[in-house]
Length: 248
Image (cartoon, one colour):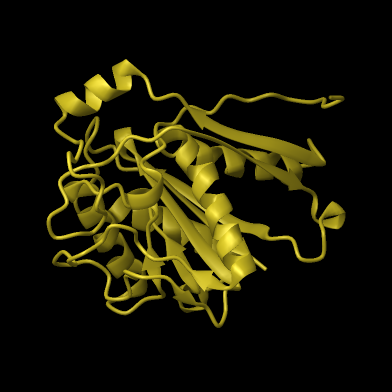
């Protein structure tokens, strides 16, 4: 109660949660707010299920991101919230949104650009805004839907930016499902928890690595010696791409 100021509804397919975090950070950055409540929520409806069924994009065996035998996503449902505050009001150990970038492939209504150029553009913009180099990124949390095209596109984008041997990479949708508009907020919370626990998450339900996946893709979780900069990625229908740098 007592919250005042602008209210925005962000609807940019599966990048909505991540773009909402960027919009909230921009409000604080330009002095329009001292604190912003960012809420990501998506209801799993019959319409959504029918749409992905028509696209033959649901894996009947469950989502297996970056797996050789992957064949689709697992629809999920979630609500998650993050409070952003101005730096001088933040706790000493708070995680900072240090930089962000977004782009659009303008490629297809549902399919991503095969070469990952749009996502690579968003990553470059986020790193430039954060004033860090690719070599300073300690962990990448990917979108990782388990669909053949998305996983291959993300792998291509990461090779473009980080080369053949980049920082540790993993995705969480094998455990959480694809929560669509809520994914960016929910998975960002997971990244913050990973930093607090000094733990690199694995990629749940990954059994056999597909060809062309990042060499640093993690199958199992492992302790992290350093998590100063985390890169969070999401992509979505319409060729939307988002990249967010979380720093401490």
